[in-house]
Image (cartoon, rainbow, N blue to C red):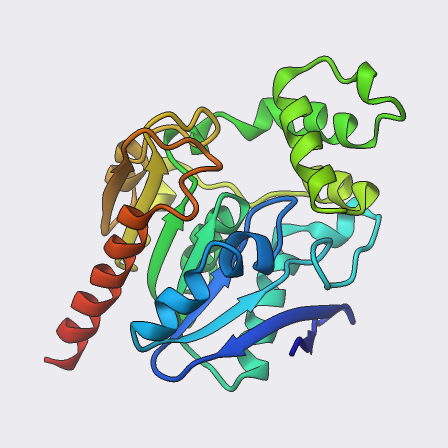
Length: 258
């Protein structure tokens, strides 16, 4: 059954909470939802069986959460506040956090801005393109999402995002506003200050994220994981990825207990 937390600016943020044990907060990718990224790929079952409490939210503009059409409503600081609101609604002060794609960016932001909230981070669907990609693509993708005629969308990547978003029966105006949002972005020097233990994951043929090694080397305490033959979409439910996360969280937990 869906639960709801209230954001500081009054939006309803939908989430699931299930299982028992150390909490893991899950943050999905753009134009997806908690159901698409995490439940449908069996991450819920995997993490609950591994002994974790799963807390998975729908980011504003997605899934069952409220969907404003003003890009100012999607400022990254507000989206971070949604994550904290969900954690607080569950009585969780600190947790492990795993984000995919957009959720991976938000996980980096949380580790930088509010490190007291996060124990360990899994940053997936984000790689070396962190430093270059979105500054040149966000407007093109946003315009493609709200184009009246799909035939008018000629950019290949914008076509890919529109097709994916349409499959999820999304509010395209809300997604375009989210894509145009003011983003938190950090330099290599700023990323180096993040001491949160992190696992950086991306697919070998993910042209959106790029490879994980450069980003992992830039973060202060991170390990890369490259998923063979996986692209941005097929990496999400990969078994190698799931096993690595299970082992990462388990080994880190054992270290904490010592």
